[in-house]
Structures are given as C-alpha cells and as structure tokens.
Image (cartoon, rainbow, N blue to C red; front, side):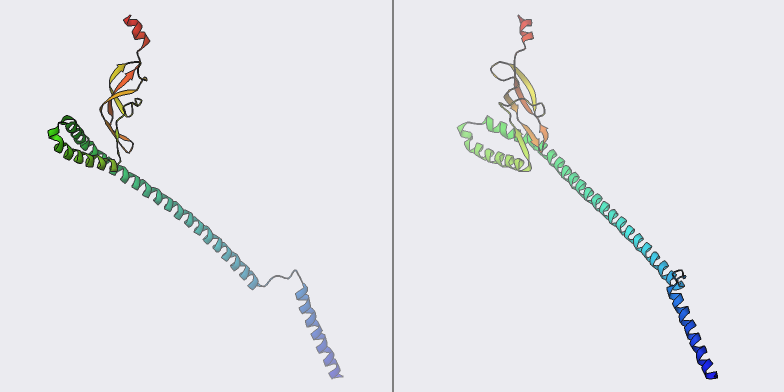
Length: 205
C-alpha cells in the first residue's frame, strides 16, 4: 500500500510541474526576462550611435566638398591674377617698344634712294623681326584706312567735310594704333570724313 501511494504522489507532482511549465509558455502576459531588456537596450543604443556616425560622416563629406570647391576657386583666381600681372608687365614693355617701331617706319620711309638700298634691306629685316615678335606676343596693329571711326580704337586728329565718302569713314592714318589682348596701348591717329551740316551751310549763305 505504501508503495502504491508513493507512486501516485510522484505522478501528481510530475503532473503539477508539467502544468506549471505549460502555463508559463502559453501565458502571453508574462514579463520578459531581464536579459532580453538589456539586449534590446544595447541594440537601440548601437543603432543610435550608427545613425550619429552616418550623420557625422555625411557632414564631413559635405565640408570636404566645400573646401575642395573653395580651393579650386582660389587656384583659378590666382592663375587669372598671375596671367593678368604677366600681361600688364608685357604691355608696359610693348608700350616702350612702340616708339622704336615708329622710328623704324620713319627711317624706312625717309630713305628710298638707290644708294641706301643695302641700308634699307638690313633695316627692313630688323624691323620685320621686331614686328613678328610683337605679333607673337599678341600685339595687333591698328591701321584703319577706309574703315568706320571707332572712338574706342581711333582718335580723330582732323575732320574733312565731304560728301564723296561715307560719314565717319577714316580717310587717313597719321599714326597706327596698337592693341594687346583687347587693351588699347595706343589709339590710331586718324582723319575722318564728315558730311556737311545743312544748318552750317545756311548760316554761311
């Protein structure tokens, strides 16, 4: 009898343990273990740190791009300023050479006699070398006979009233002008045709 009741008691205990275990598994309202809370908190913290690192990286990338753009602009501005300084220095040298070119031209125009032929040939060779060198530097000679007067390139030294030519037509060049990369080193000195003013005619009559 004792053995019978002992076995019955053990079965009752096992049944109670199974019921408790099943009850814990199937209970949805049971509170999570502390370990699960710690894992969830660590995961949220890691996500926040990753998001912050990504934002910092993007801000650093934008800063680097701005710095690169600023550096490129500075380099271009510096190159432009250097080129302008070089052109200004070259322009000053050319301005000093223009009277020398004028002297060559006056000398060549003055001595056309046969006895000066050898002299002229040597002079013309030197003059051509100088003119070619100035042209390679970017100098343009302004010799505007037959063109319209342009106050930016020409300076009217004389005016001739006439109806034989278009009003504002350049009839004669007293002295050629020179332009260097768009900058007028010296305007051309010219004579300009001007149509008579009808009011001035009536005043004379």
